[in-house]
Length: 422
Image: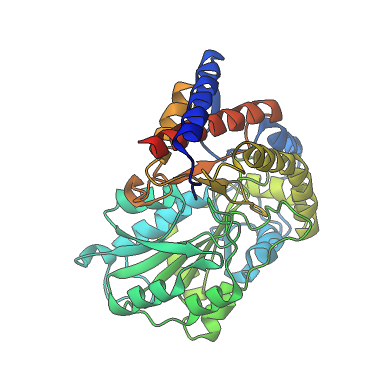
């Protein structure tokens, strides 16, 4: 990544970077690029939700949404998202606000009850492990850490996790019970899984009969270009390969409508759906069907989802273009960094020289620019190379975003040149 420089040239670049950094600190910025939250302008697009459902309180089938029941969620909402998530409506549950909650609950239920195809509860087994494609989503890793599930890093490629590694690990170790996947516009690299990756995940032989793919399709509708990425249908591929119970599909409207008041979805085989409903019935008498009806009336159908996401794209795309423009202008000729050019999703990955990510993040924080901690993209917060930084462009306004990315590039230059000089 780095370019060979003479001692004099390096000294000059380092001195200039130091001057730029001192000027940056003197500005007293207070900017936050830590999490991929929708900006207020994005949330404003769904303001009409707040006036819905108006005086209506019945679903399409006559169900009174104000009352208990409806553990599977409103059928009309499941129909709207069946195509988006590639799950037949009859095998899709519409539940509470958070898909992360559903992932949490599926882990808890697998630990404390017997999964379809399993011989015993996970908690009764000596060791449980999950494969974790890296860089990946820190909240997935936090769930594993919370429940004492061992995490095994797997390298990411341009088409998804390295399947040679995945196939070897799942075949040789019955303690490997699952893999985390963000298959479209992955967090944080923006990778979309290839058809071959999906097919290999579906058909691979696993030592654990109760192996599950946690398919977190968080960015299923979150495109940034005129050519939306498509992924193969994992649920159908698993069924065709004779592994009908292998996939747990998750999704939500959290970054579609109101992030704090959305609807989460779970899709899987009939046996897995029955398993989750039976377990959920012990902890809930039904989801918030009033909120689900709001979403039905607001989004209307799958075309309504697409139209709404085009309005989201109009707000997000300029921010990602701004990040790319500044990174290219300030770092493109330095040899100090590489970065992703995502076609959708919420993040940009910035890769700096080995051993520099933590120091870049620290220097940025000292200058008033708060970033996601270096290492958050890896299990246990440990990036062995200390090279990966996740950028979340969505929340700040364009002016603040420009200031933050320009300041970040100053920190990358300073730390990178100091590293070369050491």
